[in-house]
Image (tube, rainbow, N blue to C red):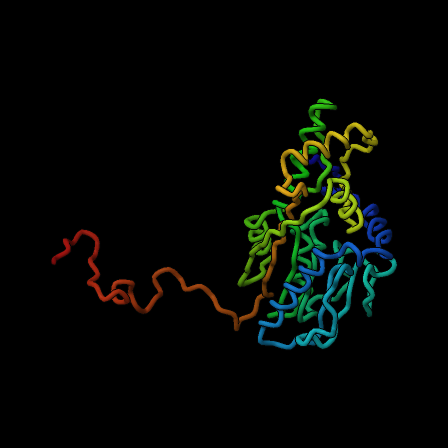
Amino acid sequence: MVTSTHINNEILIFDRSLIKRNRQRITANFSNHDFLFQWSKNQLSERLKDINRKFQTALHIGSRAPITAEHEKISSIITLDLPHKPVDNCTPYIQASEEFLPVAPKSMDLILSNLNLHTVNDLPGALLQIRNTLKDDGLFMASIFGGETLHELRKVIADVELSMLGGVSPRVAPFADKPQMGDLLQRARLNLPIVDSEIITVTYDSVFKLLHDIRSMGESNTIIARNKTPLGKEFFMRLAKQYQEEFAEEDGRIVASFEIIFLHGWAPHESQQKPLRPGSAENSLAEALGSKEVKTGEKATP
């Protein structure tokens, strides 16, 4: 269980200053490790093409493989992220936190985010800000790492740490699952919500290559309650051995799972579809099935 720090009545799970440093550090070599971000970007891009609308003003939260104004459905877009410079080249760019959007209410037709919102401390609040920033009938589309992400690594680290150190500390970030994300979209009052996911399985020569990829993506451990004591060589050798024993394929390569959840929701507008009130349907199910409707207490006749 991840513990948290309370400051000014806020729940702080992630070290946001460390997240900023991590993203600044990876800028030069991110393109060598961005395959998940590129895949997710392409998925978002294709989904956006299916929307029968052109968006005049758009905001992209996160600068790792962002969707740009080259997209056929977007006229203009601003990218926002924590580092002084964007991880990937994109203009115009705003250096700001996704936890405090410096954007006027009801100013955006479209808000996008690619694998970026999983490390905000107040995800419900961030989604509410997004909804408030959208114009009426504006669209929010995003991808976010889901609960199955790195479940193999999480399990093996916990096993080795428990056997060697007698306890377990948070070393892999917590991720929300699909039901939780669906609830959060509804709490943010985003209409017509859609939540789905895909699990990407990646193979590596060793756990060391996996850990290097995670770090080079800017996704190393930023949990405030993390154990900052360095782990020795013996720990990592046992980690590599157990991972190999439990999660290796026939060719000897280990597997790592990444669940990517896709989110879709609209800012409210009177033109949107609304669910019918109970009992308001004009035709009964019996009529649709071509059968006779029998009221409570009556006996059916052949």
